[in-house]
Image: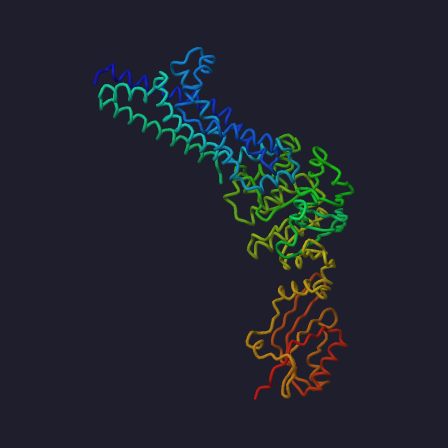
Length: 217
Length: 347
């Protein structure tokens, strides 16, 4: 294999990591609060608000039901408005982030749902305000579940980012399709897949480590 | 200290509405340990949650330490709750906080600074005997230790009242004993008023001063614990007492029991005695004065607070008129006599 080829693979790997990191961080920053909001506005929860809960739920579901490949194309005008172009890793990160936000939110909501209701009740019996229940009980107790959610999201983003090639996003998936598939180069295809496998393993191990470190259940 | 006036709680509306508690009047004076006992589903949990408004009563008033709580909401209610501690059946400790930080939680909620918190928490951990576990997480503790942490946490904000929601129901008998002893000490040392709910007579017997019996959401009987254990006034009270004392005739005897006396049968009686009767040698007198032999099948003596309570199942052996006389004799000496049935004399 030529050194040019290796360089391409390295570049594609960094592109993928960049897209996953950028969209992962932004979707966590938006998705975690959204997930908390989805949970605490449920009926009988600390900030019960049925109307808000239902509206957020519908929006989240819409976000989750659009196939990624369609979402990517459909929001091209929005992407262009945001980053000035619809091509490249920054542009590809926009649909990735938008797809990941509701994903993170639902997973975080699920993690919060695992907390025994007695813990919230205990905090309320001590005179905790709803905000204190969120910051002192819900989020710290769901820490492990939230790290699990982010790990699943990162892994999903790795595979979604492979589709970003469709809008000229670059990355490993794009490389695999263009060189491995279209130009009949099985070695490139194989290397791409191996790098992706290693990357996913890495994210999973890092995630597991964080869950272990943060959770004392 | 705690006063509930005509408190009712109904879930839902219209025909599907369920009334969990109805018209409950309850007064727990300062320093008293008051137990509410009832079967599961009787409304105990709802009742205790109405005291700190975790459940808001649909009707009636709740006041604690002279402050009417039912009128409060938001910040005022949260501040009032700082003066009411609560512990739970499943402890409800935060798993991602150490023992120290669990006990510190109510103080953090009140906005105390780190050094103030340490000053408060350390002595509490010492009091519950867990000062060496300060940096451990709840998962590393036994059930009894977890409940001790929960007690320390409930006392951190220096409450006047402690609510105990089935606090020992998830613990084994020995651990239950040590937790109850701790609660009794706290009651004595700090003059803390305690309201507890339980389905275990053992809990009532060992620490309560007064007991209320709840059935179908209503308080049906209230008495000082000594009185309740010697003479419950309701059928439910008697059932609780008999289950607790486990004083049922042996199975083999039950099978031989007949409801009406036969020509050659003896009565089997359950005798309950308290106070002076315990000290009197009644059984031997029965033999001497009535000419009736007594065969004791089962007997139990319990001491409840300052009183002694004796229970006995016995067969009275003698001619029919003599045994009748014997029963009269016992009754005149303040024993409660219940004829369970009659058994045929052995051939």
